[in-house]
Length: 266
Length: 335
Image 1 (cartoon, rainbow over the protein chains, first blue to last red):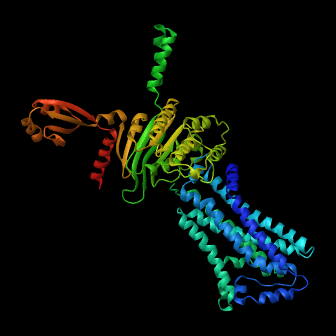
Image 2 (image 1 turned 90 degrees about the vertical axis):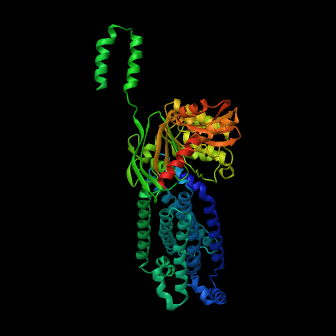
Image 3 (image 1 turned 180 degrees about the horizontal axis):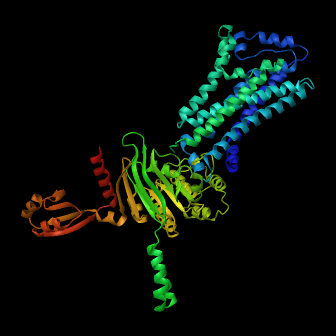
């Protein structure tokens, strides 16, 4: 790990980080604000006004009438998937794909550090950013529910939802990072690191729309983050968490191995 | 072997005849003559193929400690590919690339401690200011003494308080030079270091290189500007299509220089003598000729001695032209 590089990475990316944090905070405050502990039926009636297929595609489901069931369905069904995904794609491209493509990585590699410590620093930056983003939104969400609906939130399930989300983006981050590392050209790096997670995302949406194509969900990584199962307390979610962790570790190590041997035409 | 005979000489002979000061002077001279400067850069049989004529093929190159080595060749000749090997960015298909005896790929990080590098196409972190960038590089190198950085900035007249994105090509080049030299490295690898600099700055750069050379730095630089190579380098290598074309001392290169003579004849009748001779006539205007002579002048003088000459003048060709010939001739044979 190279401290100077880590500082540099954080300085170069804090603006995007803050933008995503602001957007996610906005959505979570709107969604939490929509909750009405006395009248779950009213919300359901409001949701009924929307086309059902759209609601399904966005995974907007009321899992249960309590607060955790509400935000677990709305916020953790869609917002938590979409925004960190975009953040992860942008960040992994900036950390590897871009500097390999434009050659500015030459400045890093012409200082007395090994490629290994360099890529470990980049991976750490990515994980640290994802972690901090989700940690901050978790804390903000807790504060918001505490202000609006004191004592109503099931903290344990809430934290599980966020741990799962972190593991999901640990895995997705490893995919986008791998794409960014393998290719020499930006168009391939960014192309594939957008195509893979967005492809998974679309598959996940399609699979939710109709029962006929529900089998498609087995081809999407988002299936490994089952917000409904977490809220209803299924035991198998731990297996899914483990799978996400394994994918992440495997691909981050894979990226490192590829990078150590890679020819850099810079 | 040398050291034994030298020691014998030292202990047995000289002390009886000369005073200590003189002896020491001779000792040093003998030492210098017999000590071979170690090889700083050593490329053996390097091959890296990107398809026919693209890449580098069976290239050998050595640069001794304290030597300034010029690396010349047309675009796409393989200069940058060779330099990428030296920096440890790519691995050879075949052959070895070493700096100070260390493998350039495996031990890149150790080599980098004493290496300064200017890339052919420098890409910076554009969102930073010049000063921010230099401090970042200094931190990456754990460099605490920034004296050389400041003196370089002053010498090159660089404004570092500008965002890199807004810098002109020349300014960026200067920034690259400062970043490469500020840690006072023992070895410099410079890929077209003066591209984008104005002629005044190119002169300053040559001055800078001479100064570094005086301090015993080993320098390998590629360039298209022959004058620059001529003024700074001890030896130069020309490559084309990834193959070695010529390796020479700069002095030798100057010797193969082509010369163009302006010859004006007194009489029109002598015209035919020139026209019928084997001399290479570039231009002719009545009795005025422009004649090109490469190498040996004897034949030229012989022919002229049979004519009446009004005036004879020499147009000195830029050495760059010589290189152009190398580039072209080599290409003809190869293609």
